[in-house]
Length: 115
Image (cartoon, rainbow, N blue to C red; front, top):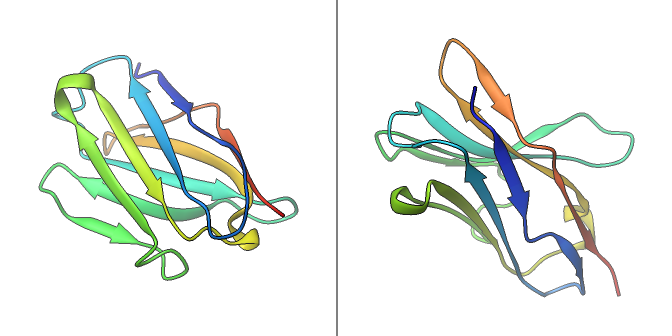
């Protein structure tokens, strides 16, 4: 079982930046894909960004050009750099590890964009 712990959320003004971190309890080298999802109040959870073991990266249209996903194998950590944040980015952000036959989720970290 892979445990995922997110951190880095908080309150930021529009136009600001945050970097989320997702620390995995084991090596992420062989994990098929890791990603970030978010869920705003009253809405379904949606994909934000994913990165596969073959370095294929996918972004949701709403965040493309503003968010950057990356990973550090040595630290078993995946990051989400978020720039030019907008109020509509407000949500709980969840880390995901996709092992193809099973997926794991973190507990989530709140991101609030407000002036």
